[in-house]
Amino acid sequence: MFRGMVLAIVCCVPLLQGCAAVVIGATVGTTAVLLDSRDVNRQIDDSGIRLELSTKLQQNTAFTDQRVKFVAYNGDILLYGQAESESIARQAEQYARETAGAVNVFNQIRIRERTNFITRSDDTWITTRVKTLLLREQQYETSGIKVITENNEVFLLGVVDSEAADRAIEIARHVRGVEKVVNVLTISP
Image 1 (cartoon, rainbow, N blue to C red):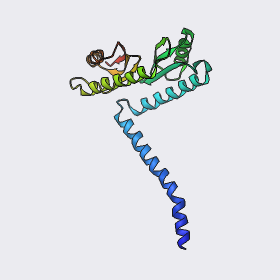
Image 2: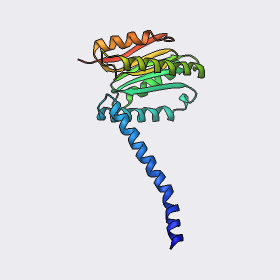
Image 3: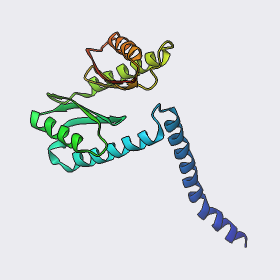
Image 4: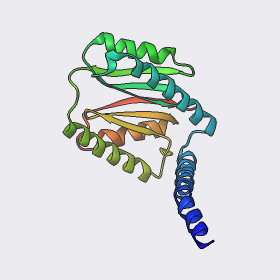
């Protein structure tokens, strides 16, 4: 009898660990949804855009050695990164435009060599700094702005009023290391 109980416990422990992972994953996912300024349906639509476009890019071997990245936010797709030719950048843009649910496509892919690890690390620091300064902003609602940095260029996406957009651009421009700010913000009525 005792051996049967021990065997049952030993068999159940790995299953319980899976439950903990599910609970933690659900908590993290729920928190991410709640902290996002977009409504849940928009988040789901953007996830569908990401999945479809990611699949298209992965299935085309021309993109294997390229640094073609994208973000879908409020139906807008921002393409960024580096490609070795204009035709690859145009192909990525065509895929984005053909993606169900895409509203606007902003092709900011640069024709040049891929950035190195040090540049990407600097980009991460710039993004963190810009986001921190936007979160500190008390006069304007800037929490719905998505910040992407690639090769010292800051891309701002989201839906905000014109005053918040102007303030966000001004904040990003003055962060050390930023060479250019690309405004992909949608102005709300």
